Length: 118
Image (cartoon, rainbow, N blue to C red; front, top):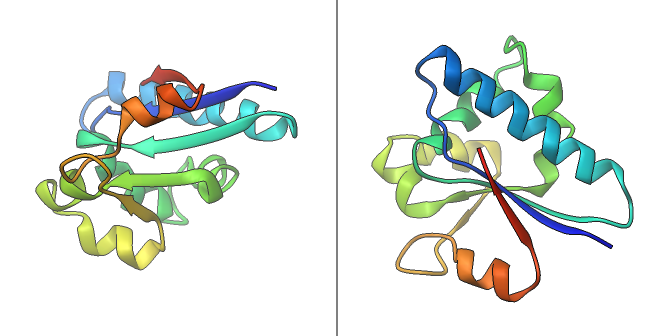
């Protein structure tokens, strides 16, 4: 069994960030498809901005996101800082605040997750 934590830090501006979110979602999907693997998908920092974008059914990557959405969570502090707190609440995505308002990456490492950032 493999335990992977895919952390999306890429913002929504620029072509390179589009590549990072798509690669992050594809990586998450690969782990999600393997029933023996455990996956945590965390939108952190500017990455929290992607959730409302990907929730939009007109997004080119909506279906890819939907394939891994059940494993998704977001940083509580960053969701507020980037102005997407309400949109994330409306989407029903869990907001994490384990470490000073942020997700605890240390806890993921301590639990044996391989941390992969995009």
